[in-house]
Image: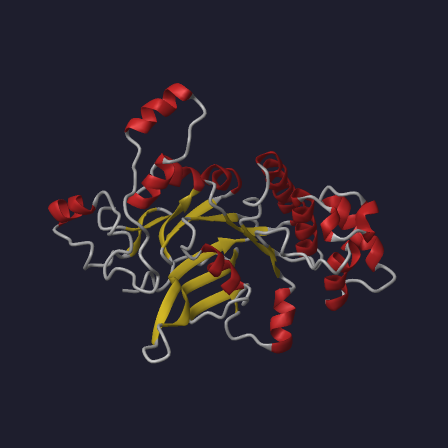
Length: 343
């Protein structure tokens, strides 16, 4: 069953609309004489909408398809099926000059600040060359514009001739942010931009992203593991599991009234700063057992059925075998979407 054919929303403020997106990878396993081809369903029927100026957070375990979704939007990974519309323009079919023009509007901040910067280029080239490529500066004005961007991201303009190896991890991530801003985009995919940084630096980068969003009117797709961070920065949150969106809601609503068993398990694992409260919460904490199934061979029914603590209740109350019947991704109440037989 398709996750959803169309999310009903005729709001003109929709900047990015993803419908039934699939990104599958063909892999070969086995020896020379017994080779076998498998399909890895990294993103499997995902539908999302993001309004102008808002931040959509995407959370889930490693390997659930968060980063692949972001990379598919930028066409860094070729999607297998579905639709990606940016300001009404279908991105999946764009090629050549049209794609290059659209990429100016959609940028990405990568997870690893060490491998995402070319070690052979200095700061002026890393940030300034995209300006030249898109006609936003010439050789005379490039240097001054790069200095202005460095100030915007909290770095000294005196760093303009330095190379990446001369910076700390937090400073490198600021360079990555400046590079994304260099071409004046409207939409930025933030692919776990703080996960490789020290805890003391993470809050600074989050605050910087929020300040830049207000100043430049940016829209974010924010991918992360840290649920506390996602709640702080996001207007809406989508929870992914094994290539699918299992729950989507406003940030406060998702945290206050989670509907999917997987979301409940994730939230129960978030530590609470009060030791007395944390001790009481630990008594009711949901501990998931087993491993995440392979995306090459997902369960026939609900993707979460092999680890779901409420699977027996679905059978007793609804008479539904979650291992055989895939739940419909539907709207439980205003703006709160969930894929669970018990919701």
